[in-house]
Length: 421
Image (tube, rainbow, N blue to C red; front, top):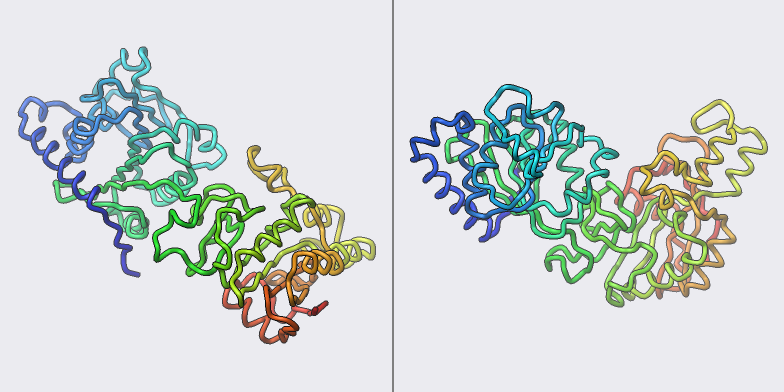
């Protein structure tokens, strides 16, 4: 797969200035004697700080103190916040200033922020970062850090410097970053080092580049990013193109989309949001537009499976725990900050969907149920509804083919049409 080419005039200009600043430092014979400048990459770090005077620097997974020493050298009024697995003051390399720790210029956290639950505890610190430096040779660590940082709603435009981008696996991560970036390794780094201009997440359609204003909208995308769709969620994730309240679409123009799609989203709305959500989606659909929702809990099937002790999804019998997971969504398995959002606040049956779609003004619609992937019980409801086209009785084959083009989460042999209007 070819690398994603992401570039900007600004990142090029910045890289040239960092090169020039680092070259001037390299010519200083006194600096070359300092332990922290045994690594060529640290001249680039010091050059960045000297040129751009960041106020909040996040430094992650550096085994020695050398990068922190280089970052600290020209840091005047800023702060370095370092995340590591051990105490940086007692490893015998260089000499991070004790005064720096005492007066708050350097603050360390001995914690693993590759874990999302731990990362989120420091989210407020990350939001204000000017420079983030990641120095991990481990692919999984680097991958998790990039995913976690992609969920941060930064207050500004931070820069991220990543070391070890010539590591075979990390190079794949680097190649697939679609933020503006520049490979700084020509300065002499053999491990590879690059800089990223981290752009803030968008919250409105007009903020997206013209070529990304697709006619298909993926609502409640979570971590699933679909090509050719605008992927939207209420919180930032690695897949998110837009951050928006998924219960209303006031930030979108009338008649824009040909398809609005969602999977396992609608049941997370409050009951008094359901009708207004469907009406608003109807407004943003174009003349031939349609909405396709999947993954709604079918209460009739769930209740029947529990009462009659049918074969379970995850056990021999369909027990109360499985009924709870489908009707409530197991919110206790989510992060504390997301428990309420994870809760299923509604359950559905065919009659309920019929009433909602009719009241929302759709001219024609089909309600169906199906099994999820390899499961054997059709506990999921779905519907496809059309804005203006009357009496479109989509066939089972047509419905299956349409869903296949979007997701593999549906067992297509299990789809059963329940209602066509």
